[in-house]
Image 1 (cartoon, rainbow over the protein chains, first blue to last red):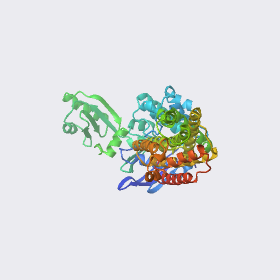
Image 2 (cartoon, rainbow over the protein chains, first blue to last red; image 1 turned 120 degrees about the vertical axis):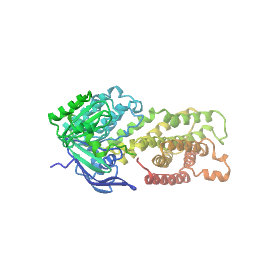
Image 3 (tube, each protein chain N blue to C red; image 1 turned 120 degrees about the horizontal axis):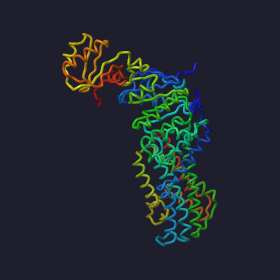
Image 4 (tube, helix red, strand yellow; image 1 turned 90 degrees about the horizontal axis):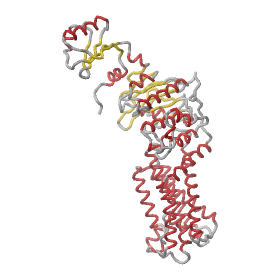
Length: 303
Length: 254
């Protein structure tokens, strides 16, 4: 059996008194996209940088493609896209990608990759003169040009416009179809929902939830609608079955949770009608990954 | 599904990686205006200016025979120390060194590529400075192999301190400090102003600077046709060992 792409078990990493990873465990398989989600400072980048061989773990075990992450043999097998890019500011896009391709035995044709990511027009443009989105895509191209078995993408679509984001998503889907293991960190819940086979939610250095997106969002559905703010929810609830819950968050956005049978929908709309409340965007849907994320990590801002 | 991304991992042979990195670095240096100013324009301008105008007393003999070895030493300083410190400092700051660490190019390969780049640029500088000096009537003496030896040891010394600075200070601090050191060594290191102009005590200290040792050593050989300038070579060797050891110990890649 081929080893797991990434196998992190009980990872501990401290910076002085600050604990970045506190017994963190997850696995990632080949041919799958694994998304690491978590608030800023949760320990995502630390974890990824230990898997990339940049830092040493203080405790626990980490295996990447079955090897110690600091094994030099992994450098040819693993592609890396850093948040900071790491492209020399004066380098031209085409020149830089050809340079990186030159480090590998059987690289993807750099011209083809530039074309795929819409960078052909800036092939002769210096990195510092490219837009933020173009810079991101060049860093992505450099991560995959060596035909790796595993790629780490740290916030690959942060700050991208919708077209560039779509091009990035399509490339990630193609990597996955080709059997590459993709580890993605992101703040973009829609991105995780669309791309990830496996979602790992990290907070305060530990994994607080881990599973396929439908497992995390669950089968539970919600009734959502918008209406004028400040409806009397206690009065509404008294007209509904006892186990039903209702909340308004943010103002004017209402969520009803409970046994969503047709009668419940009728009771809610009847109550609204009797109070002269016009609802908008009334719908019944599953919880989104964002709901799950906010539920698990809290809504308050972190300092 | 078979696509262009079907995994096919593997590193290129080490010499090919080093070759690719060296070619890239040389191209970028030659395209960089500030670097060219530092490595070619300033040395050539100093050579032409001081060789043609009697602005200072450089002792007996033709002015260009005194100036050409000093300007060659300055050229080595500008590439191996100033240019390398600034370039590498900003590469560290922008995560370029970190990102290269994730490629199959090993750190030793990167250092080899940087050293090769420095030597190739120095070769270009020698050709240009030498051609201008010859046009100004320069007649070099001595054994070229000894001059090459001095340049190689001087390059090692300047590279060690350039990398030490790049790998420990903030990039902006490196930029300022590397330029300041360049200017100070230009004035105090016997490049165009003979050290004989300074008083005895100060002079014996200045003679221990690596730039003074390189300029004086090259002058002994190329101007006076001397054999191996042992004292200058020893001074350079001490600086080289010190600089490289400190860089190896304290350099931070990110």
